[in-house]
Amino acid sequence: MNTVTKIALATLLGMTLFSSSAMADVKKGQKIYLKKLKAPCNMGGDKFAQKHTQDEWESIQQAGKFADEVTKLCPKAKITPKQIPDVYDFVYEYASDSGNIPSC
Image 1 (cartoon, rainbow, N blue to C red):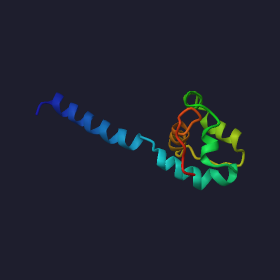
Image 2: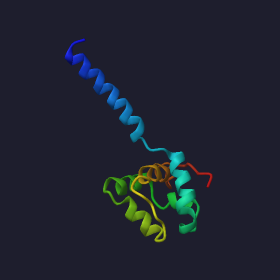
Image 3: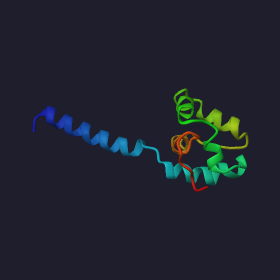
Image 4: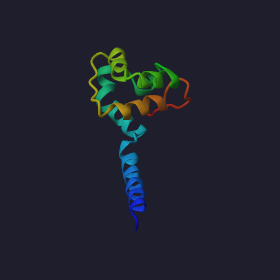
């Protein structure tokens, strides 16, 4: 194999591994919400997620203010930076304009 082919294959393999581990998960976010946020927030996941529309949640996340917004909505809540992508996917999926309703 020539060098270009080896580099291309290595890049493709690396991107495949990175993309699967970097993807957040709605179900995992729901579990985190139930475990870490439901009691301190004193509200179900449906009410929490419906505090904003999908566009609003997306804007908050892109601005890097997601953890701040969680704290604003639920002052007693503790969320780690590692949990943010999953919880974000959860609230985005069940936002007020999504038409979806979580089972928590």
